[in-house]
Structure formats: structure tokens, C-alpha cells
Image 1 (tube, rainbow, N blue to C red):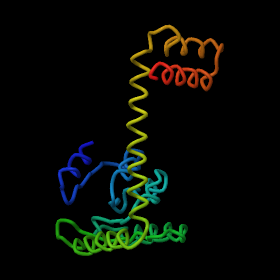
Image 2 (spheres, rainbow, N blue to C red):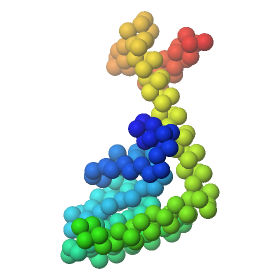
Image 3 (spheres, helix red, strand yellow):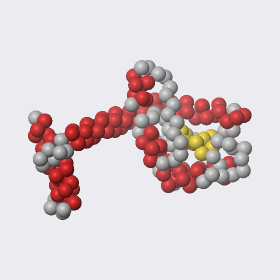
Length: 189
């Protein structure tokens, strides 16, 4: 929501920083135009990136603290993993940085600029905007529907009774949810 507000206000660049590698980062990728994944050598980030699906969402990889042992190995592992997805419209560059010394920062910015140019020149940018708008609208509709169902939960034949029927195995969850949806639509008409 905050990113949408800042975007509507005309903010040129909005950075969303997350901590860790997991489902939240995958969700953020649905919000952002560009997803940068920052990894640190020797911490197991590369393996975690594979497990969490980060390889699929990264537009640019940054291996920070590249002055540490294992940085070249991390870059090689990332490159090898990217080789397993050769049909991607954009191959994420891997940039090594040492942030306190500002090493690699210009290369990282250049990688971001290259990705921006790729999005502008290809259909990928339009596809991402459409996917983002669809995802946002569906999330808002889901939340609105959930609130409507919860607000009517105590009503006869509402959510609470449906829960009890499912627990008692008198109704399956699919039928119960279909019935609740139909009731909500009918009552809203």
C-alpha cells in the first residue's frame, strides 16, 4: 500500500528492503519493477536462494562483501544456477560489491539501468505491470470478500455454521465455500 501511495504521488524511485530470503521476498517481487537479490558469500545464501525460489524473481544479483573468501565461488554457483534457466527473456547479471569501499556500486547501478532499458524495449515491462495490477486487484478483492464473510460469520448458515459442518464432516470445504460465496453474492444483489 505504501509503495502504491508513493507511486501515485510521483516518487521516481521507491526502494523496498526486506531482510532474509523467503516467501515475503517473493511477494515483494510482485510489487516491484526490479528485484535485486543481495547475497553474502560464506553464509549459505546461495543455497537458501534456491530453496526459496529467489532465483526466479531476481533481475539483478549482487554479491556483497565480495572481498570475503568464497565470493568468486558464490558468483560461479549463481552463474551455474542461471545456466539451468536458459530460456529467460533476461539473464540477471551478477555484480560483486564491497559496499563500505563503494566497489562495484557503479556496476550495480549500470545493471539496474540495463534492466530498466530491457523492460522499456520489450513486452516484459507491460506484462509485469499487467501482472502486478491483476495481483493487486485480486488481493484487494480477496480481502474484501474475507471481511464480508467474517462480518456475517455468526449469521444463520454463515461461516461459523459452515465451520462446524466441515468439522463434523457433514459438508466438505469446497461445497461450504461455494455455498457461502453464493449466499454472499445473492445477499449483495
